[in-house]
Length: 193
Image (cartoon, rainbow, N blue to C red):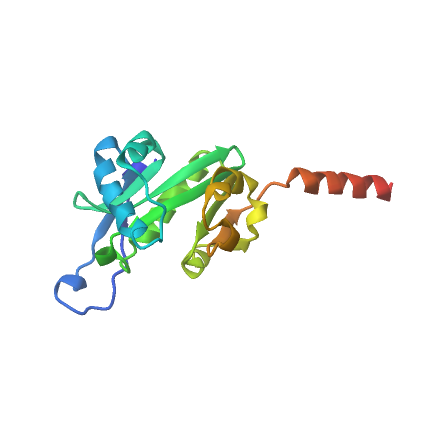
């Protein structure tokens, strides 16, 4: 269960006495009282246009999708795992407080969300990001957005930036074949007989 995992975090090179200490981070499923901290984190990134804004009501309704990483009871970051079906889940709303970036909280959070996807036996996890290098280091690979129609249908069709999207679609795992790919494969198999 992800609620019992603890990881020592990597720290930056020592620049002050406080940054020399290793901090231990705990990743767990979010509970309703975490909604305020998650709202604050998402607001921090939404005001710069990095994340889409979410209301406290919306976060409260979807709190079961969220995971938090904390140190000594203080939420350092959050992220959500949205399940599209037995074949695909999306990591979304990843945020770490700016003062806690570079200490490994993002990696710990992603590891926790991937562990949750494995618990559900979901073979493929996708995400849309403006930081593809970070996620490439974690095993994600770039794909065309059209390869993830569930995400495009759910969110992208309503996005005001859909024509000029600056996010990169990435996956970890194996995407199932789309209906068109399956039909093309069947046609090729019949033609070969």
